[in-house]
Length: 378
Image 1: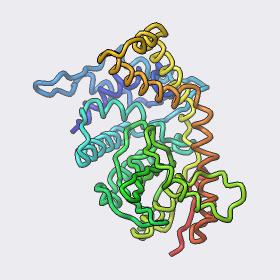
Image 2: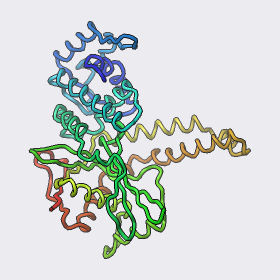
Image 3: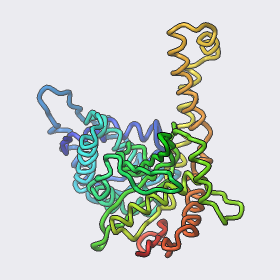
């Protein structure tokens, strides 16, 4: 597990340069007051030590990007840290919960790598209101990590049947670049044929004594298993709908997910409308992937691997095809991704309200006007 001072050192030495350099995510102004700078100075003088391990040590040069005068970029989002000890304690707890979750799901992880990745990317989950109160945001994330309500679906579980198609659900732990801590995945089966549909990115936490489910997205997997016969049957979900614009693979994922929530007695669903840094993140990702792909696969190399059917060329072709799929999925897609995460998601939820009259939109959250609220009547 990660130590308090160790995390502060990794934040200063590894994460701040990445964020300020916009290596992965757009720049953020981190505003620490005198108490924050004194905390950094204390860790610099009394660094974390662990026998047998390399441990980072903060220098004066490392602290320069965190000085208030270097965090005044008017085009960047700003996080004001009023209580630096609480801020880093919450980050320690979140990172250690992520590590614990990975281990529970038999997900191999390096604790240092998990720490750095999460410290760089967790801010991608923030909306505009979260930037006003970063402590509330971190407390919310910690509760998401700790919740175990649907972890019982860690093993694939039968849910229901539709048109003789059997449906199964399985929860998986997400990576730090995802909007949520977990995803619910669905597999359909008929006569030994398999068809996979979209995954639901969700989180759950208790509010005022009641479990609330947050849905952040309904996303296609990069590599799906498609069975045309099963998919054709799913189109019956659109019966009676003129000019349907929602794909049944996504609609059925939400139908199945609602069935799971009903079993758990969860009746309130919240849907965040915006993650402030998401568009900028995908723009950076697009440029990075374009540079990486063209450097790794110049035209001459592609011609060469398709010129002869040697074992090495066949292996390289498989690698190239995988990279090409990822390239097509990411490069130049920031506008499409934004639309899928907003307009298409809201359209899908409206369609679900038509399909299931027990699922209804009830308005904006009174505590955060960037969150839609839905009620699932019993």
